[in-house]
Image (tube, rainbow over all chains, first blue to last red; front, side, top):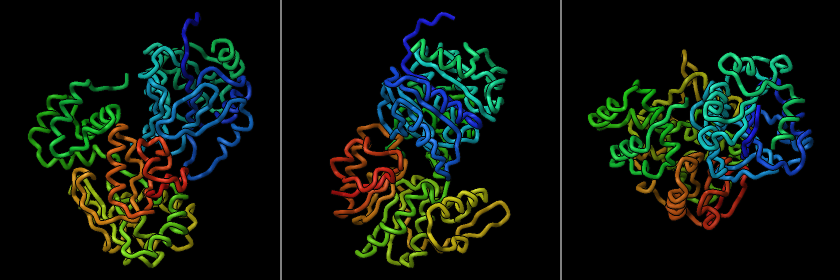
Length: 190
Length: 270
């Protein structure tokens, strides 16, 4: 597929089994990555999983759990905090919400992806990784319909294939990638 | 595609509710759009005109308010905040009489009950007066019954355990069929204020304001208005507790308050 877009943002959604994948992606991406990356993962809100701390060790870019109204910057990896929905405005500012659970979860990948579809249109990349959930499917579909580039981890490679497979059941994303191909794509096109 | 409403529809909704809910004009448009759709969905309206007709005919608006507001759905949400309230902040506050606490926007009562339990454990409940502002009488009535979903219990227990407060919490509630029922006696020191805006609330000088995760939904200018209003109602050195992710980007906060602990959303009046 021909890529002729100026990307402004990458959003990644994952659930069960995606932690190692996120780790691997961040480890491979070069320092001073030109656009911000936002990662929304389902995790227990009562437990400090050490998620951010672990990513800080492997990532060559700064890992941040943002505050409301923070401005997303290149060279930064943003982790959606537990127990808040996160949305991104077209001016790159972060909005949080404690509104009702969506798909039985907060944060919801759908909520993040919807906001990115509305704010960035074709200038965003949405990625769905491993997970035992369907959260993120509708959001990625919205991104697709509005012209964003959509990527799904190959279900055959995903530790838990339910989430990437759920995407494939309702839409045909632009790419179905192994992690290796996904990393190569991001390095080549950003 | 994600459902949206038009700008004209949003303005129409605002115009109808503004007389009874002045704060509605200060909401972020994106937030208000989501809440309008949520209200319509919850109340079974698929058609906009039918919804508008209903608003024209229902002048209590209690049902609308109960769905429009974002409820807190956990007791002791953000355990570390409650740990700090228990071990550090409340013991400091009660050194000065009178001690007044204000919840400017109480939507479900979870936090009011949590604080009352905490004060009772510290044996200082009768030394603290709590003012809880609610936008609907229906909400006040519901809070006063103390009835919540039994599913709240697992969250309550987990959050409370993480708060590391070394007392048995179970004496403050009972589980009955599908309900968790808080002991209504806990509210004996709480005065509920039915008001449409915190800007109108009449409260005495306050030692602690708990206004968590509410400013998230307002425009920058109105955040400043609310912060200034709260500032004027506080004692020197009083504490302002915001949500843990609201942080230092709230317009006007840094000028009037010093940061006590940003990760807890805890600030002090300068």
